[in-house]
Length: 169
Image (cartoon, rainbow, N blue to C red; front, top):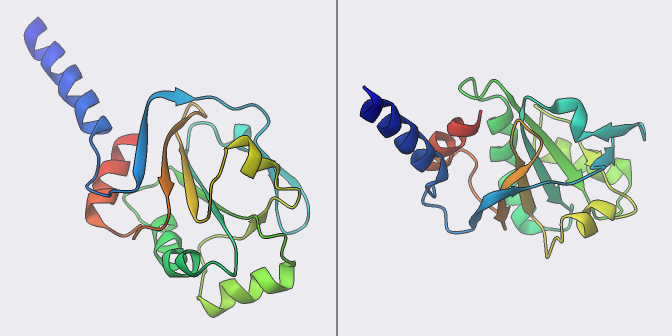
């Protein structure tokens, strides 16, 4: 019986750490902790990730001028409404210092309906997370720690990705 429990524990952890076959995902062996991860909603109200502990979070950093951002945003929008991921919360955070009207037009043109845009006008989060470009998605586990990041764009509807991310939901 003890062997079975150890086997189940080991295989569960291994499955959660395997790459989903997507080349630009980086999984951290030791999740990273950040203090004061705060960004703004469209009404300039502060949002803290601490408010969402217990949920899987994706902080997607993007800009309207970014073509790969434009390409991935519709699949990210669909991921938010995926019924298999009931504990996921996606925050698309614009770091382009762009106006709400420009960002809103971007969302309307791409038919984004499942989440609202968020903003990081002073680009503080870009510094905190050491972003090297957009799009970059930071994946935060239920304890509020970064366990992985996606450098560049991906198809968020990819079955390999969805099956992998379910381990953290």
